[in-house]
Image (cartoon, rainbow, N blue to C red; front, side, top):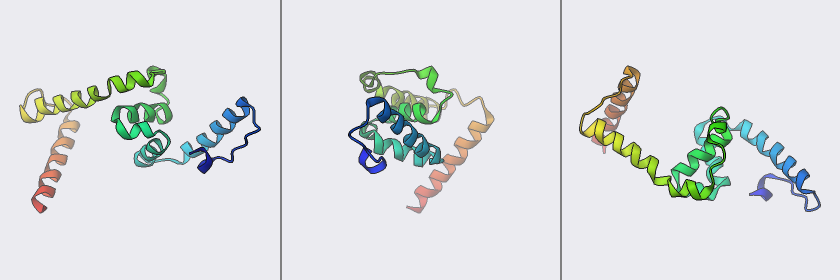
Amino acid sequence: MRGEILDWNDNWTEEEEEEFIDEEEQQLLNKLKTVKERVEFILRKYPEARNSCFYTIIMYIRHFAKDLSPYIGYIPDDLIFKYEGLFESIRRARQLIQNTEGKYPPTNPNVLRKRRRLAEQFRKAVVKL
């Protein structure tokens, strides 16, 4: 990855190398505007993110949600991978309880409208198949 983006110099000190990487990477990060562009950057830069949505989310927050990143701090990779399935399980459990069992609907009317609209779009798309 470094060779693709950076003009690498083997004679640099460690401090010069870090400074150059930070400047180059920051310029690239500033150009990425959409979530898709940003996620693609993460998937390209961190191959481990290709295997874990949780890791991808953590990397997204670290790079693009600077107001959230101080609250996350540094989470070691081994802990990220230990709990990677937990967030997906929580999401699926919430969906099952709310959508299938019909319990505890959203309290925010905007969320409820959005979910109903998305469900309707999904039903229409399935009918077309």
